[in-house]
Image 1 (cartoon, rainbow over the protein chains, first blue to last red):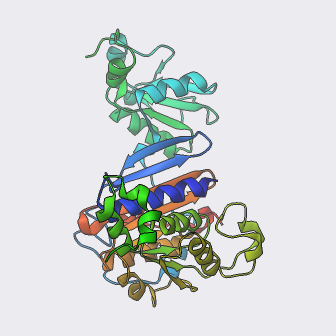
Image 2 (tube, helix red, strand yellow):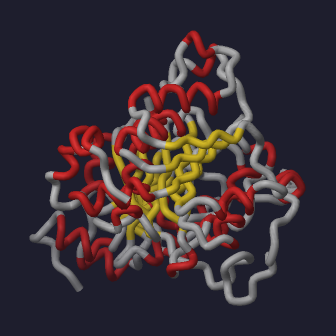
Image 3 (cartoon, helix red, strand yellow):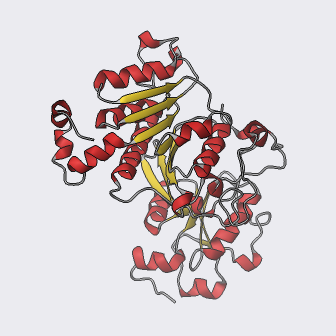
Length: 189
Length: 187
């Protein structure tokens, strides 16, 4: 049934392009998860370095696609890190935490920020001393990370990802947006 | 271009929608769409594009209908087993709406045929199932300046977007600059 849902969205977008009506799915990647039954949207922008459509493009005619797709050695290739794929909005983050029995919540800000405010149940591991190896975090757990605005936590998340952790979530907008969207009593700084 | 009386009656629920109307229905009739893939995505895509009155549909696929396709490739009936998918999908679409023109290309899309094919259409819809074809389609759509409505599925996940670098948007390579390693490619 999954192809039906996806094929019909594709048909809808074709028709909108022809009619030149509505907001087309350009620059936006729509992700559908049938098991969770949710849709997510990730914005995709033009890569100025793109080999095909970038400023100094190297692909100027059709190439050998069999070779292009087969030539990648398995060992050297690593899946690309896409920070947005780990992001959850404050609401999604809160819901996921509540329903995830293996959830471990990590605050990667510094001690002084922790003292201003923190999310209940969190454990503090400041980025200044963050090391996946000594963190004691289990790869079996779902690790939920947050910082002030979401930047430091994505760096910590990337370190964990490189170290082989797979189940990782980042609070989009950090505790600052959390205070706005979820906990109006929390101080913002 | 005009609509005949049968078409006016058939599309009347479109004609009364301000977002479509007679002008929009004529645009659909004038449109030429090329679909790559007549399988899981191509089935619903083709059936709806045909039903809404797209004037000319091109369908490219080289495969034949197999018993294991039937549970999800809904344009194909059990009696179509062994037939080229492009023929089976064409017949299903025309059974619903014989006003439209369908060009079938019972062949594998490759470097030799892709450019000439794309030139004949306004929009490309990618419902293919492998990375080689996906990069080929992306590059050819870029060179021929055709918008590409791209969809892909894997297990319980689907992705849909429009690549239109000619109007300032990204292309498939902006999103995935390299194919995944062979060991990670789902078969």
